[in-house]
Length: 232
Image 1 (cartoon, rainbow, N blue to C red):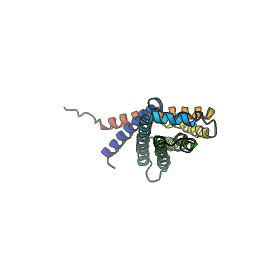
Image 2 (image 1 turned 60 degrees about the vertical axis):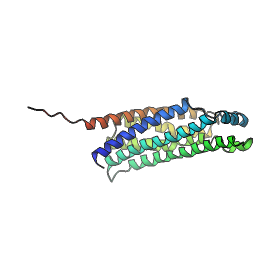
Image 3 (image 1 turned 30 degrees about the vertical axis):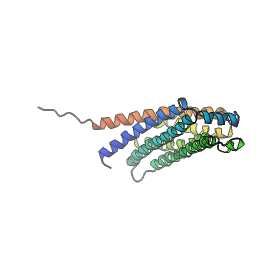
Image 4 (image 1 turned 180 degrees about the vertical axis):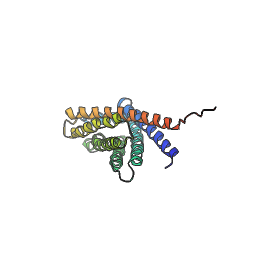
């Protein structure tokens, strides 16, 4: 890969990282979501009927977010691969981790199936079978994210592809993701204390992605600046 292609990949990856953050924040704050499981299935079905358009758009935005996250992670893994050379391996850990987040597509598809099922007239306890799977996949995706952050963090420490503070900063959300994934065994509504750790992990991830993306953009821009020629 020539220098221009590497620079373009860094720019595209950084842009994808920022896009993933914007979409994830929008999913938490703008788009509607289905009620928690402490509501009756009748209430959940009514919400799915009344806000079907918003829920379908939410599933689409979630798909875009996962795609942007994959592009961001793949560009970082590629940068790490170039720095490590043939004898390295942390790039592979990072790539496998970010690749594992593609299970998010399944969660979006299951949300679509649930909303469509309600729209087609399905009612009653049968809906519980398709309800909530997107949420639980969003929790379990914490483990691939932790793997990605671990691979990037350790690889960046060894190669210097990121500033040391960014490399070290990846470990905190990675640890929180591992602990937070355990919330699947806790309270069904909020996950208890482990659910709080998972929220903190996602907040840390958002900050880390933005900081890393900005650094990558500045690095790519700086690479284009050539020393001025002194005419005498």
